[in-house]
Image 1 (cartoon, rainbow, N blue to C red):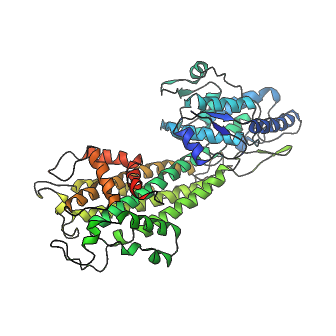
Image 2 (image 1 turned 135 degrees about the vertical axis):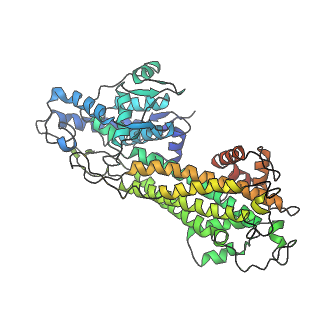
Length: 517
């Protein structure tokens, strides 16, 4: 597997995904090592000076006024990391910890933090050997960065605490390092602080959420196209000239996707000018959940791209306090997580609303009064069979939870550190709930795809478009049967969820119409 190069510049979204999810090894570039050495020389000069320097020869936070003697500074670093590794709760996912470590390494590589090259190289070594420190769910307030999560990672560099090896086996950090041929470091002046003072956890989760949402929003367009088609909706409302008079870029992209996917549909063609079987096609307008899909999906896209802009800026940042500037170190407030926390909350709103409109489109299939000729609940024998009745319940339960998760975390603040840290971002909490929201959105969209596919089959002998037909064929080829008597539905839902999350549904459609925007 090719190594990801970490230099003085930012890592990319793609680099982060390769390391966090793909397990790619990492290497520090020569320019990064040179920058690290230059900054370390500044720190060593300040450490030897008689004048105290915050973060180098003093305590931290509310204890910053105490000057620490030279002989106690190694103990200061150990004490800082040990005391701050105070997380609690379930283990954080491996991909989150790897993303967090990569982003901290990227900041170390800027030459703004003052760590030694052997410390940075050891962090790279943990990533390369697949050694993942155990990080706990709770502990970060998202100000002074993600202190507790990063401290659990720094603890592993010291050969302390618990880690999981590349196979996922839980073991003492010292044993895992020894097995990989790695030697723990004894942290010296400034290093402990440099390892724990960053927004890396919340940023890593933001980048992964953006990556997932970009795919899921295109998949939501697939689901919407299937639903509009199967509910005998019109594609005329998605015409480009109608989008042009309200020029939001995401709306135009979503509408173009819907138009492309519904092209050459016998179902759509059948009701443009006259009746279909016993259904009179005299509706003036489709319901909002059908007609306004591009407006909702498009606004979601635009919000995701705003979040991506913020993430790119943060990836290009060197987050630490104090930071090395020239031949000195300067205290600053760049560790505050507000910019990241806000967009994490925005994306939770996006996930909730896109899931909400998806659930509404699904529900229309199940009501005989609104489904335009489909059997109640898409059941084989209504009354004996319940069809997809409870699949919509599952959607509704998830959407209700997503609405609760859309309440922003970033508007809360609980002062800490004896009122020194008197306003915090709660960005870590925003990131954790967004991960749940993204998962919920995928599940809701999967149920819509599953239900819309059943409805499209029930429109036979009329055939769906080649694009939506490819999505139906994917489900049928994955063990999900077409309409028929009731059967155990949960496994089919989980199969559909897997096909949505993996990108298989999107890929099947794009195999027909080309890349969706």
